[in-house]
Image (cartoon, rainbow, N blue to C red; front, side, top):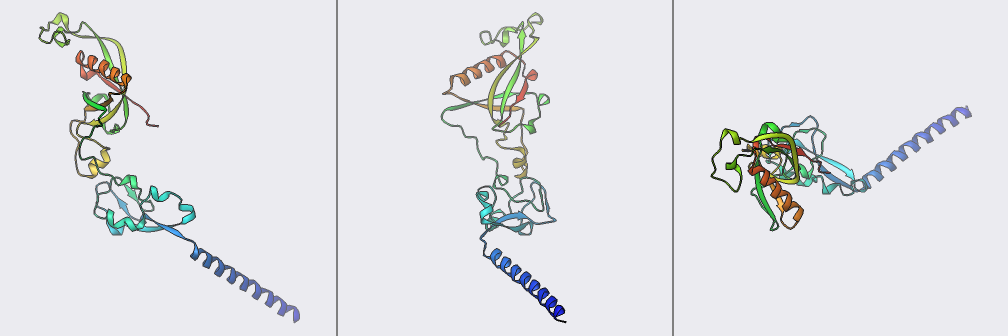
Length: 246
């Protein structure tokens, strides 16, 4: 009989210890400071251009010691009012955090630094995919080399007659001139998804605007070589190499 009482008492002590341990952990967890980040609620799907509203958002609490500098990249939950009504710039699915870099607007105007000059290069859109090239990217132009250049196309003889005998002929070899930094594609000064989210359609994307730092002699020399080639060639035969931004 004493053994039975002892067993019951041991079970009681075990249960009591478990309850006290749970209360201790619950109390400690409650005392841990946390940061509330802005997330997308479960079951919500948002398409680019769709206006954001309060029902799309959910508060995501992360212990402060784990948050570190996350708030430099992710919106705080308290910021959700500032985003309501603005268009989504990409697809969102429930469970995602809302990054600050996602909420962008296309630049309103073209701005050049004092040390920059810009010129446009017409490129046949069939020779590259405009949607995969964005302002800020670095590109190199593949320019064909011509022989029998028509006199009328040379800078020294802009008014000379063009005859069948002097028609430009592509020799086969090409020259790569670059890299250059893209400033615009037509009137597009930002990424395509941001522009579409603002319900704007880009125009004349085959006109690639590139910038040159006039304080760097090597960039100025590359730009001069490219302009000379373009003045004596056919824009339709120009290709593009897209470089990594890493």
